[in-house]
Length: 177
Length: 177
DNA sequence: GTTGACACGTGAAGC
DNA sequence: TGCTTCACGTGTCAA
Image (cartoon, rainbow over all chains, first blue to last red; front, side):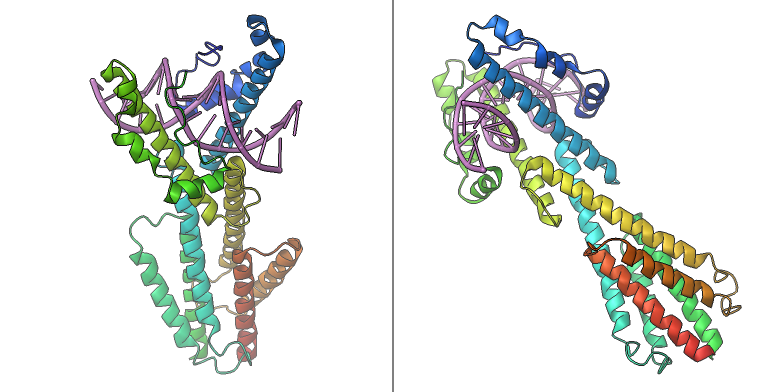
């Protein structure tokens, strides 16, 4: 049934360690590439050569896909399992989390922009201070309400922005009143 | 060689359309599940049942992986090709782009925080205004230097933050001087 | 007609 | 133990 017995049979491991093996010393692709292994075992060289070509192409495709998956795992934090499907799932969750944080920041900016700050800068600054203070408090509440797993880098960045704005507001209060 | 002749042989299409077919009307997994198709064709039922179990499990694994890949493609904008490897590659590029934007914002916040704003808020605010103005100008230069392909949503968000800070600085100048 | 991408079944290995 | 995940070769289809 299988004309190739034990090509790549010595790895015997799970997918990550297998990738490490393939990366350095598991260079048997070249062996399959130039050796006429299948042609010597079969009488017709043309069809077998085409079949071996297909085998090599499929191997390269699989290897490329594994490399991509490995690279995806590298750029995504909080990888729960080494599973192939879990890696993609964690990547999806991470991207969605980034999108959510981004839309939250954008909503906050929109809320800040809906003040009278847009036209006539320098005027009616006293009625914008409550807006800044309100956004500051709701922002902190939102951050502290989002569970204990607030370890995302963009979340601590958001916290820093809130902290900076808070200090600016305090400075404005001390200066203006 | 193959004891299953044409299970899933009528789709005959590429991977996305195949997913659409599988999603709605291509529910032949259940048919394989309960029908004793393999047991009737082979004399020993135990080994064949184990083999069919393996076949069904493998099918479910492949289906789950394809669903994950489809969901990944849904959350990533700018999908160049429908290829499996290209989808993962675009996701990697997108995550790296988000990380780059995020680190740029974080560097900006760090630059803003290195002023004397941290201790004694409300004091020495006159010597912080040049810092704010400098950061504003360099930020605009950075944004306009990053090529014409500045269409990322987090980039326009960054532009909005810069704009808002600029107006606050102008308001402060008009108020304090 | 060749190439690239895919789903499939199958045996092996790890929990 | 059985269940899950994996790589592999093979056939098939479309560009």
